[in-house]
Length: 45
Image (cartoon, rainbow, N blue to C red; front, side, top):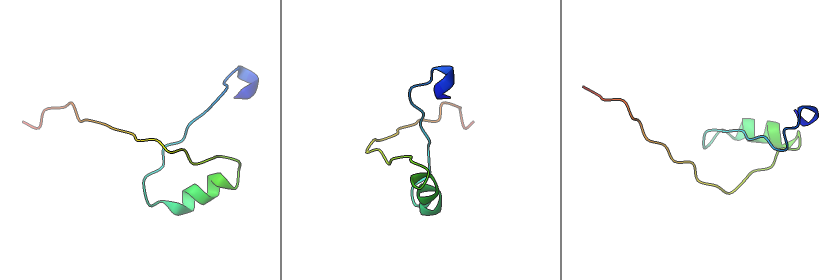
């Protein structure tokens, strides 16, 4: 990705999935202190 000009990449990991967090930490990824918010826009009718 760096060779293609991508300066940064992000992963989204569900809270509590420590195995995945550990997997990526061992590969140089860092945990970031951010909040992700979402909203379902589809009607439930």
